[in-house]
View 1 (cartoon, rainbow, N blue to C red):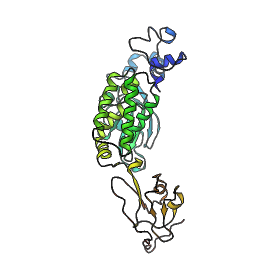
View 2 (spheres, rainbow, N blue to C red):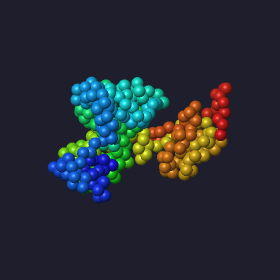
View 3 (cartoon, rainbow, N blue to C red):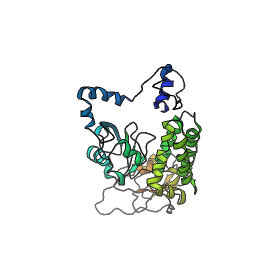
Length: 344
């Protein structure tokens, strides 16, 4: 990933480790094999023949005052219509996600959108009306980047999102400069602890301090933008971090170490589906008896939650609250008149 940075890509082309060069060495003067080199993204080159054929005035009439032309986005995630989308600069995020993308799948609520690739920031619903251009995305803590646009719904944990991207960036960092290499390692360790229920007071402030240091002191664009996923999730979803740390609770019920599965005795019909799929035999209960999950055996894989028939929804996710006790041998409630039997 780091070899996407221009000077790092040039060293990779030369057959050497893809590490960025100091910025005082301009590639237009000394680039590939010490020759003057001009490197641009493929999307930039694709626009060149259009501008030559149609003229500069035609191109500058598209977009905003500071961001001209169109931009191609890879629209993915919890959105109905995924794919590549080309829109004029300045179109709002809401139009892209809801008018073009068709809105959120499964009638879920929109939560955030992450733009710019792995080192981009997340943008909450309150900012969906901002025009999509370089300056506006930068102002809200994200970026245009490679044109990635990942839509997230209410079931997404923002702390886990930050952990995922920091883990990726830590693996992909070339490790040449200390701020990026060590900053990412330390940030990842803190985020993993928070997601595992081991977070402590002061972790949020430490993440903010690390992020600021990385932005100011890293050698290349990867390190300078790598903190965006952390800083933006803290800025817009600080409450989720605090819930993980102070209440040992994952509001989105995603982080494994902070959730439990419970079978509601009022809804369980003893169909046995959950028993069949449990990989560690953690579920007990025979015919006509409420099924019970052994919390000590449970590995929180979620298989029982997935297979429980929608008409029952007996398996419930819990986070930050004790699991209710159910006495072994509890009989299921009798079926209401006219209710169909569950097919095993």
